[in-house]
Length: 286
Image (cartoon, one colour):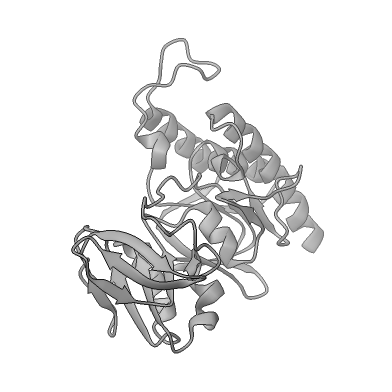
């Protein structure tokens, strides 16, 4: 077990790790890839660079800095977050436990443009299987997505729901489906119902009767992970106080996932605050 888990290795995550390490904490950074920053071709509005720098280069330098100071950098995709007395991150390759955690994987940028999803949020459309599976026990539900995160959410629902169908919305159906999971690769036209979700309608005119749709497109963003622990969110923004603390003890957030200006300078600042706040929290437990 480590003192602090930092989920994400971008500007917010690295800054959080650096300040927590300098405060004497042991830190493990979990990161799947470079996210949006790794795909940015040129940055010229960040302090200290005479010439433009690529996002990939900035990301690599930041990770190396954190590792040099003592952080353990683990390449894994985090698909779940739980609590067993400590905070536990569930990855595709392992499980990681710590006294505190900082969410810094950025904001969710993938919103399926399917009519009905926004309208039925809270009335059949959910973003957290572990949170809401209980409400769909014995009912037919669907998971929208085609990646490892979608398969993880489907696996959470299978023991509880009457049936679970993976809807890939025209994307390829992944291999290695869990036993009992159905899959439909047709393009979605809309999610329909009266006061709550009743069906998914496909572009070919067919409909699939369902009581709920769980959104799991792409990878699990910070807001999706926060919801799994009951942290307050507003849209895709995690609600934090001035110390970057959520309403869940030991859980902090920094960067794009907290809303506001989506710039590196803001992410670095919030990461530093979150790292120092996490250090103060962990010391209070000892």
